[in-house]
Image (cartoon, rainbow, N blue to C red; front, side):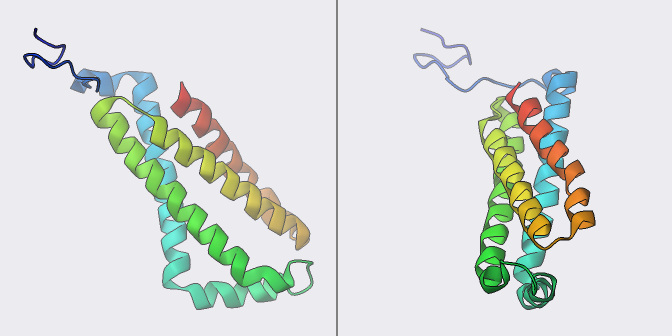
Length: 152
């Protein structure tokens, strides 16, 4: 028995992606969305790891008069882990989409990215930084739209 992938006796369950498939508008938008989210969240998360003390000091001042003032270090750790996980899943998912046609990891990464933006939005609103909260809306639209695009 010859499988779909040409292997004798074995049928591959991983779809093969052909180069012209990558030029399909839907697939190219999925790949670029996944790449954009991977870059955005990996850079942001890595920056928080590299300059944890600086980020913590800035956040302590930013949230000094908010109900969250005693939870800043824990929140920074949660946001950092979420950003890195979202970025890594988007990066791995984009690669998997390009090589195997499967976007599941990228979808989960985009969902985690959307959750991360909601957490940041919540913090900005509690800190009464309304301009900062408003600046997160385009990122939310990108992330939520990314979920829909990647799941298509």
